Image 1 (tube, rainbow, N blue to C red):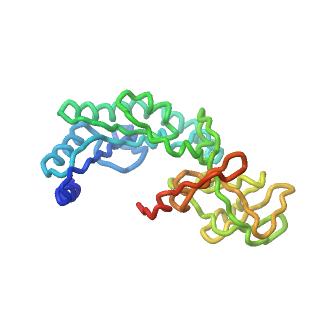
Image 2 (cartoon, helix red, strand yellow):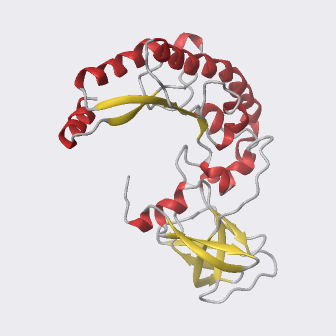
Image 3 (spheres, rainbow, N blue to C red):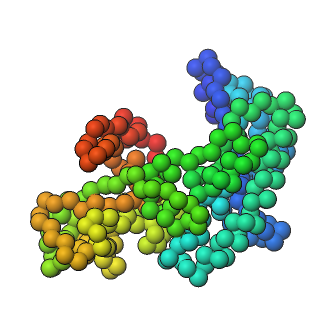
Amino acid sequence: MRVLGAAGAAAGVTLQAIIEADMSYRPVGGAAHIGLRRSTIRSGREALAVAREAERVGGVKVVGIMGYEAQIAGLTDDNPFTAALNPIKRVIKQLSKPDVLRTRGGVVRHLRKNGFELRIVNGGGTGSVEFTSGDEEVTEVAAGSGFYCPRLFDYYAGLDLEPAAFFALQAVRIPAPGMVACSGGGYIASGETGPDRQPAPFLPEGSALIKMEGAGEVQTPVALGKGARLRIGDPVIFRHAKAGELTERFNELLIVENNKVIGAVPTYRGMNQCFL
C-alpha cells in the first residue's frame, strides 16, 4: 500500500485498489492447503488492517476485494487423465463451497461494517459460474475463459460449453507416413503439468500428439487421423488447454463466421502490452 500510495500522491490522484483474499480450502485445522497460494489475507480483521493502512498512507483507496476459489473453479472432476481421482475431486469441491462462502462473506461484511464501500467483489471462474454467481456478496464472476471454451473445460462434470477458439500450426516436415511435424506449438497451460495442459489436434479428425514428444516450442509432431493426408504448408488445427495461451502469444484473434474471416481483434500483446 505504501508503494501504491506514493505513486498516487506523486501523480496527484487517488489510486483505487482491490484486496486479494485467500479462498483456499484448509481442512484439518489448516494442516492441509487446497487451492492457490496468492494471499495471506483470510479474515475480515486482516483485510481491515490493509484498508486502514491505505487510509493512513493516502494516495490509494480500497474499493473492493477479489478471491479465486481455484479448488472449485480450476479443479477438473470429469478428467479422463485422472479418472481414479475424479470422485475425490468432487468431494473436495463440495466440502470447500461453504468454507468459501464463510471466508468471502466474513471479509466483505467486516469491511462494510467498518465504513468501507466495496464497489467490486470479484470471485470464481468459468468452472464455478453456477456456484459463485449464487453468492450474494459477489458483484462479478471472472469467467473469461468460458467464452473460448478451451479443452480443459471438457473435463468438468455438468459444464456444457461449445469450443469457440482454435489455432493453426503449419506442417513443415513429414517424418513418417501418416505423420507431420508442425512448426512451434509448445503452448502449455498453467497449473500442474500433465497431458490435459497441452494443446490437442482438432483437425484433421482423429489426429493426436506423440506421447514421447508432445507439444514443443520448436516443433510439434502429430499422428494424423485415419485417411488424413497433408502436404508441407498445410495447417493442423488445434484447441488450446486454457485461454491464456492464445491471448499471451498471438497478436490478434480472427473472427470467423460461416467459414469466412469477417474481422480481427487485437490481444493485449497485439496492443504492445506486456504484463508478465
